[in-house]
Image 1 (cartoon, rainbow, N blue to C red):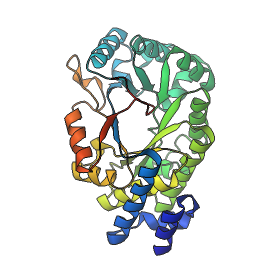
Image 2: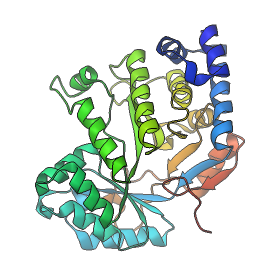
Image 3: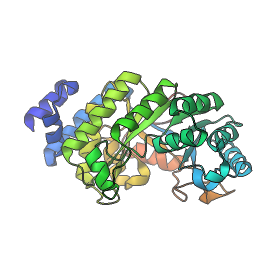
Image 4: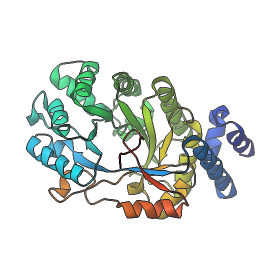
Length: 330
């Protein structure tokens, strides 16, 4: 542990996999030192601002075949200050072969960034149209798609994915990576995720982070990393803090931003994560009044005042960002 902490402090990119695994087990004073090292690196790379984006989530399966409703919900979100609309989940078959592209066009009738379609949805959209995923990505980009979520990655290990899929092989890691890299090649950015605390080992978590770092360095297309607790076996606060700190170290130079996902943790833990390598809170997840249940996380909303309170407890200023971490016009 002492050797791993020393390397982390001096040159995080020199950490070996074995040292990274050791750091994931940090506790007590070692954990506090790890958090401080990660937080110092965060300060060097992205500064002290705690960032957030004003967004609205929509469930693709619930609204994807009702484009008039989509237009109304997006208009309401923009009126409430949203700069991003996030669509997750498949567009229903009733929307037809062009349903995904029709949804993109409907959202983009308004001046808002569209963050939509996980890797499984990208593959399904292409198959529905009878095209390659690369061709669909180009058409979606031209229609106004701006970025894709890195959710549905689970753990990027085929054995773990099979276990999580009830013993049935899941989408292979190689194919998942191929599609994400194709999205980046089309000019789209993506987030990246890890669902942790399930059947995966610390070594598999490290390999997952290394794979994301390789993609990020090769394409420059990953904007942020989000660690999400497994619903099967929620990880401890200790393990969560260690993972966020190690992610900051292992993703250095590949993924600039580490998110403290406020919907997934209690406020005290979010503040600890912001003091241990994380710099972003993610989206406010506006519900609106027209149809609050249209999003997958309906009823889970963070106010600007709530975001400011979290940042203030971490001793840092709050700043609104765009999806790609740019400035938002006043």
